Figure 1 (cartoon, rainbow, N blue to C red):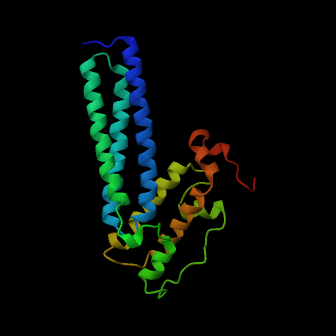
Figure 2: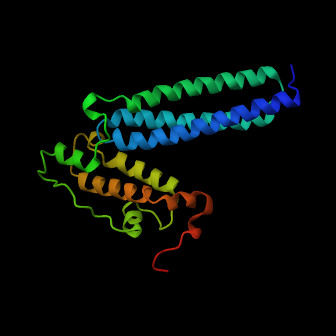
Figure 3: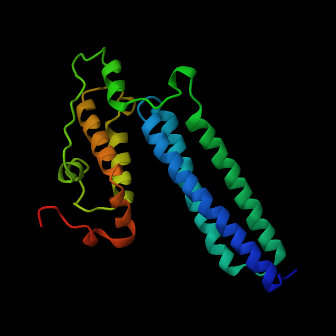
Length: 209
């Protein structure tokens, strides 16, 4: 059964609104997962990260299909798929925010390392080694002015390689892991970097130029 144009317009508008909201929530949840899961529950984080990335891929496919919707049955199938994806997101979001009572507040990542190594031990709590955008980008192996999406991608890739849980408990890479966490947080705190996703790095001038 074909849509009339008015009903199709309302349907597509509603679907796109839900898609935008879901993408924004998934991105926000992934940021929370990076901060609160990666260091303490690495295996769970990897599953959540994979799931959220798959959600983004499936939502993109639905968004593309919206352009070709002509029949009511097609529209109903797409909406059913979106509802399934929204339910899957809720599952991952619950996993991210499910914490024992003693962990209800966000844990300082550097303090975690201090506790994990016996209150200092071989790896004393750092005083901060990232003091500029140059240092932050270099720590992540990126060119100055790279977008926040590139920053997040580089951070996640490096952190997963350095994490003790993924290296059979070997903590020798923890100083480097602390440094890239600091670099990521330094850049994420700069709201102007988010604009480079739209403008491109050429629009972000180097401070020394």
